[in-house]
Image (cartoon, rainbow, N blue to C red):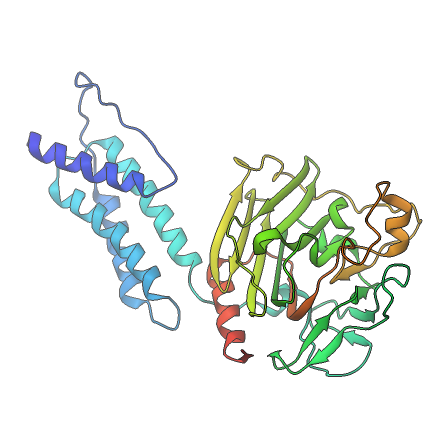
Length: 365
């Protein structure tokens, strides 16, 4: 029986090491052993195996199924071995629930239409005012870079690339969305998805900006990392996905950032796969609500910027440092962009994978 007890403890220790949550059991030999009731745990295990039996390749990646089954098998072996304490039963039930939650979150399911705030496919191929998809039907207007900075005045150019067609940005060219309500983009949950094919990798390679760092901004930073800044009522959070060359020159990549202040998480995905998840443990300001809309000294609401940080007028009025007004230092995106989407929810990992799968099939490499 003592041998069984040691074996059981080792298995539980292996299980704990594979999880982010650790609930310790006393190693004090004098502590009284209280046997655990495994009836509920056995039912939960049976339900878990049933979920695996019903999982299809259309809904789950094989690695997702295998990962969940491995957790189930570890717990099942401990249960079969017997002589389990009450605390060990509690621990295993917690780990099982965590594994089940991750398994369900990884299910590749569609995204409800009402969750799409706004999105642009750039499939029009022509025009300077693009009415987007989504519940808000916002209009994005093609704009050149500031004439005070760039000697060449060009608009974003439609190109036969990406998912059907894409936009090519250079010389500060960008999109401006004027007819938006800031509150739609300042909720506790927000997800942004986009395809990018950069021409250069640099700091300040802005994808989209709502009042730049005064509310939030999404960009590609040095080393090709996805980078997001969010200002909550608690303060600023700067975070990247800690994966060099996540985005590289001349290659299409699908980038998604998911903000969930209700659960204090900020997640990055590249080509459907999670590359980094921050929590308030590492980023303490990922709590509460987003900050109120920034009030510009210009006295007007700034546009939602796609492909640039802000307007020249705003920068001139607010930026009190030198050197920002050159073609190389002006924060703007350079390269191709396609299928940018804004969601009023925190996308699940399975939804991100589903979105990637839907669009990558049409991608022109």
